[in-house]
Length: 154
Image (spheres, rainbow, N blue to C red):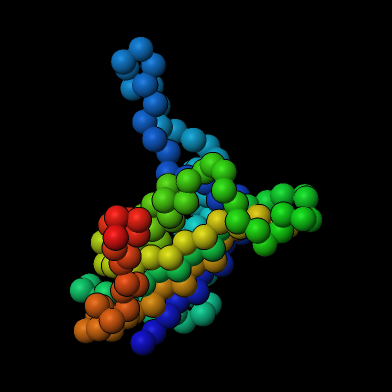
């Protein structure tokens, strides 16, 4: 199994959403998101060139782990969960789109498993780990789903 580690410096930004004003779509442009996209692409290019990382083949089943480091000057918060906006799924969507645009993986639909966290940090940035995973034991990897029936019903 091969793995690619991508370290990105910059302030994590979510995927821009269409905005409407009086029923008219105004814009999805966000200069900060565009800067974050360029920073992800640059980090991916560096991983491809300097680290001799693997380009995953079409049909590969991939796992993505992401740590988004949200900056704060408050030392008490460092390492603790970041539970405010932006939403982690929107951060992840922008990152997956940019990583797939750099030829590390053919397209983001090859990712079948994700794990993402947002934490407060002194530094801003993100770390992505993409691995090719064996899929023959998918059911063994799943967490047991609890019963939906409340315990007090007996």
